[in-house]
Length: 183
Image (cartoon, rainbow, N blue to C red):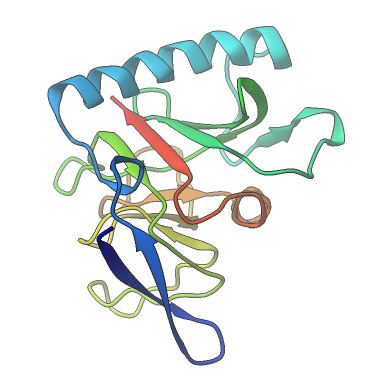
């Protein structure tokens, strides 16, 4: 079985071996992009049914009836709606507004595993910018993290989340949790 190493900063350097199975492979094929787009469309419908909402105000998020324990098994990002949807199995448990990549540095679409998690990280590429509750999705620096939400796509490709939502999501995901990013 092949493995690759992930460096996690937890008081020092820690290397975690993760199997390089399809569950841990970044998938940006046409089929994966379509599956992510379909998941985003389904998530919008689920939001209406579960939360009775068609949209949220910028910076707003909701967790289902205080259910804040247990693992989030899948995150769906809708770039067109600037929304994130957290699932436990097939149950939608949280929704949030986001700010994704801008037109010059768009957020990639497809299916991504969470590769690394750090409570506090600073960007190597962008002037040491803070990235609290960082959950890295690819080897190029794309991640979900707490950040400024201006109400439109404004990041360098990352998915910015409200700080409290990012904190809860960070606590409820694991390395390997699937993130589907649809247009």
